[in-house]
Image 1: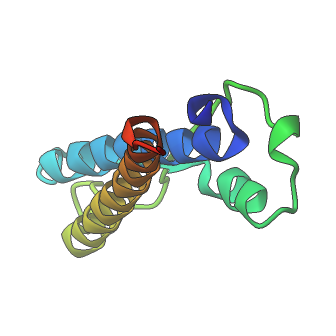
Image 2: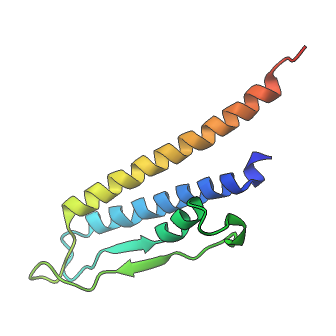
Length: 122
C-alpha cells in the first residue's frame, strides 16, 4: 500500500520535520523577552533533501532519525537574548507552508486510492 512506500515515508518525515520546526520557532518567538535566551533550530533538512534528491537511497535511511536541536551561542541584545523576531516569523511561515503542502500531497495520494477503490469498472 501507499503508506508502506518510500514516498509516503519521505512525506511523513517531511511533515514531522515541519511540525517540530514550527514548534521550535514558536518557542523562540515566545521567549523573545527572556534574558539570555538562545533560539533553537533543527538540523534535519539536509538528510531529507539528500533523500529527495536521490543522493541517499531512502531505503538506507533508518525508520527513526534523530534530528539535532541546535542552540545559537551568539548574543544580539545587551540582555544576552538573540531572538530575531523577523527571522523566526519568516521561518515559522515557511514551515507552515511546507507542512500544508506535504499534507495536501498525502491527501491527494489517498484520494487517488479512494477513487480507484470506489470506481465501478464494469
